[in-house]
Image (cartoon, one colour):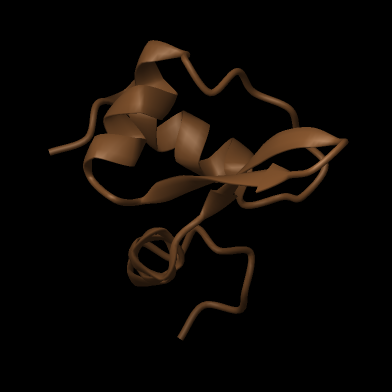
Length: 69
């Protein structure tokens, strides 16, 4: 079960351009649950990105920004 901090972090990461530290405890937990991954870019460093599993979880919770069904 995700904590409210981890869930909030997951919601922040759904929007590209948001910067979070990859060693933040909530980010590390989301990586452990395979909801977030680190994408490395040669010269630009690395970025955090939702995995398919992370996007599906947000969709099931109706927190993906899409219309409610």
